[in-house]
Every structure is written in C-alpha cells, then in structure tokens.
Image 1 (cartoon, protein in one colour):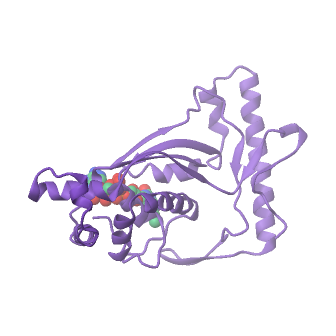
Image 2 (cartoon, rainbow, N blue to C red; image 1 turned 45 degrees about the horizontal axis):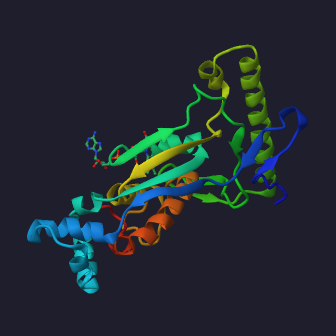
Image 3 (cartoon, rainbow, N blue to C red; image 1 turned 180 degrees about the horizontal axis):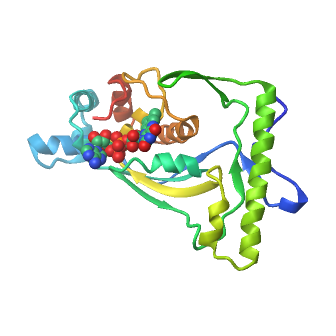
Amino acid sequence: MSHTPAESTESPDSAAVSFRSEVTVELVKHSAADSDVLWAARVSTAGEQSLEELQKDPERSKGLINYLMRDRHGSPFEHNSMTFFISAPIFVFREFMRHRVGWSYNEESGRYRQLDPVFYVPGESRKLVQQGRPGKYEFVEGTQAQHELTGRVMEDSYRRAYEAYQEMLAAGVAREVARAVLPVGLFSSMYATCNARSLMHFLGLRTQHELAAVPSFPQREIEMVGEQMEAHWAKLMPLTYGAFNANGRIAP
Ligand SMILES: Cc1cc2nc3c(=O)[nH]c(=O)nc-3n(C[C@H](O)[C@H](O)[C@H](O)COP(=O)(O)OP(=O)(O)OC[C@H]3O[C@@H](n4cnc5c(N)ncnc54)[C@H](O)[C@@H]3O)c2cc1C
C-alpha cells in the first residue's frame, strides 16, 4: 500500500494539520494488585488480615480469585483503581463513555481552548470493507485503491473542516460555536479511571478474543484502546487477569 498516513504533517496552507492511525493509552496512576482482591474477599470470612498472611499461600490465592471470577462474586474486584490517559478520535470516546458504571471521565475542552488539528486516518492494517448482512458480517482488507481513496478523501475533508474552524475563530466567533464544523475523526484526550471489575466488563464488550465465551464485535478503533488498557492491567493483576481469561472473559 502506498498510503501511509501515520504521523504525517504537510501542506503550507494547513501546515499544522496532522494525521494519525494509532491511539495511545498511558497508565498514569494506579493502586491495583491481586492482593486487593484477596484482602476484600477474605474480610468476609476472616475479618481484617495482614497482606503478608494473604500472600503466604500463592496457590490458595489463585484458587480463591478463580472461584470469585467463576461464581461471579464481583465486588472484591472493585477495591483498586487505574487511571489511564487516552488519546483517540472523538468517535471512540463517544462509544467509550457509554460505559457508565465504575468509570470516571474527564475530557479536554473544546470551549476553553482551541482544538489541535490532529485527525484519524486508518492505517494499512485496518480492514476497510464490511461484508455480509447486519448481525452477521465480517471485515476484509479492501483494495489498494480503496485504501488510497479513503486516505485522500479523509485528509481533504479534515483540512477543509479545520480551515473553516480557523476562519471562524479568526473572525472572533467563540470556540464553542466554531467547533461544530469539526468531525468525529478529530483526536481528543481524556483521563479515564476504573477498577478491575469495570475494566473487565469493558474488555468483554470492546475486544474480540479467542477465549471469550460470548463473542463481541467491537469497532476496531475502540478495541485498539482496549488492547492497550488490557496490557497495562495484566501486569498489575496477573492472577485476576488469568482468571478472567480462564472464565470466558465475562466480568464477575
Ligand atoms: C459491539 C457493540 C455494539 C453497540 N452498538 C450500539 C448501538 O448501535 N447503539 C447504541 O446506542 N449503543 C450501542 N452499543 C452500546 C451498548 O448498548 C452499551 O451502552 C455499552 O456497551 C455499555 O455497556 P453497559 O451498559 O453494559 O455498561 P455500563 O453502562 O458500564 O453498565 C454496566 C452494567 O451495569 C448495569 N446497568 C447500568 N446501567 C443500568 C440501568 N440503567 N439499568 C439497569 N442496569 C444497568 C448493567 O448490568 C450493565 O451491563 C454497542 C456496544 C457494543 C459493545
């Protein structure tokens, strides 16, 4: 494929406009460990215990976490916290913020600052063509011509939209009014804070995985965000992560 939009900037009349194919997810803050799950679960039978005591028998700990996951005792998975800084197109955030329970969000403002001209263009590996009927379809690669057309049309459209935005700002129109012309392919950024239980619910719905007992068919771009969050979480809570996969990736 000759069209490679990732991280390109060009054109003198829209010099600042740039195009990206990747989303980014940074783990900015966390308090999350498997021992948080064990501590919360065992308080119901043993009262408060020291963490050392809980970590004495790793096999027993693994077994307890697996039992909680399998039998859907969900609340012990809530006593932890992860804050992610996510940079992705607005259409991803629109889907993301449908996840209401166990999530907190703060997104950059288009009212208080001028929005940067960074726009999403699918990369070469993004399957472009949908085949089949609603509810039973698959995505296939697409031809080189389709990839080139998509890149060219999106970039032209983004440039025109951003020029219109700048024209209004230059004429003194308020940012909150002028932003109406900007498309959902514009990159935005947000902090998203969750716990392991709410993250598991998100991952069950927003990733495709061979171990999923109930398959989901998410849009690829939100899945890209989910995959990066999953990689961070897996390192923080390996036993919980293992139990999630072993039990069909269904949130307890
Ligand atoms: C592949 C895919 C396609 C989608 N397509 C569309 C679409 O075409 N149009 C569209 O509008 N949305 C669509 N969605 C969004 C979807 O309907 C959900 O809004 C989104 O996945 C969040 O899921 P949730 O409500 O379970 O999560 P959360 O809001 O985080 O809720 C978590 C859980 O809490 C409980 N809960 C939360 N709120 C309530 C409530 N008010 N009453 C009772 N129980 C509650 C439920 O058990 C819920 O599963 C799609 C989602 C996916 C994954």
